[in-house]
Length: 329
Image 1 (cartoon, rainbow, N blue to C red):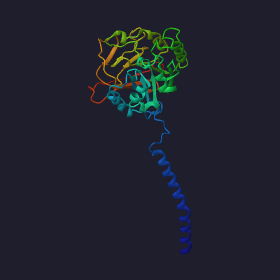
Image 2 (image 1 turned 90 degrees about the vertical axis):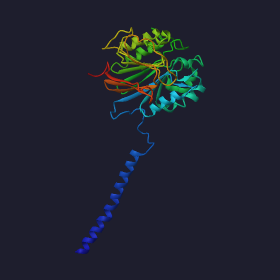
Image 3 (image 1 turned 120 degrees about the horizontal axis):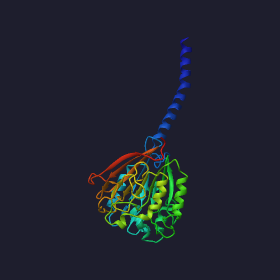
Image 4 (image 1 turned 90 degrees about the horizontal axis):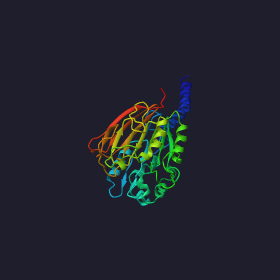
């Protein structure tokens, strides 16, 4: 009787042990797949927070000066620790936007984020070549169609638009009523009637820079009218090498809390600092001596903003949140 019991026990052990080993092996394999470094199956471009419907869009304009890369390196360091999509709002490689300047200056700083960056051209992108060809050569399809340079994409419930604000650039056809970009923008917005909307480009319709011909660009009003009519939420620009946030306003600079566009001027990517003049109407926050990036956290029906400064840069910051106009009630 004792012998039978021992035999049964031995038989069960022989059968169970391999099964347990197989179960442990499978568990270990699954764990290693989850934790393996360098596993990029979950693309860092699209997942930004624990909420799968929340996205991060971060960036600035006026970035890499080949004369001094310290500012661009400092702002690049900020983005290294901020997963999400990157916007680059023009004047990316100084002084003339040549292919050498893109390779030797922009690429050595913000170029590390190239695969998750959405660019817009600035005026310096057209100094080395009138058609901006080095800019389009460097970015390829990421920059949109050559000579046009405007395009759009979606981040969850948010529709993001990159504009070409160089209205006199060859082949663009201007920015006025009936221009190719105006007609494209109207059509693009009409296809996203329920989306929250953020647009970015280089030049600002309004800013408080000292030289008004550099700070204010009325030729962009038609594009703002299109965005305003579609209940867009945010417009981001650079050009002025400073930071400024405006209260929601209409295309004619009238305060409009309900339907207005909130404009951010973020020419703080590292080129240098420009002085600010007296604040123009609706200017709510301003700084002219801090490099940094604007971080937008885009969620269904709402957004948060945060200006993230380079450490030690005068401790300036700015943050807030708001509901989007087309968000679900």
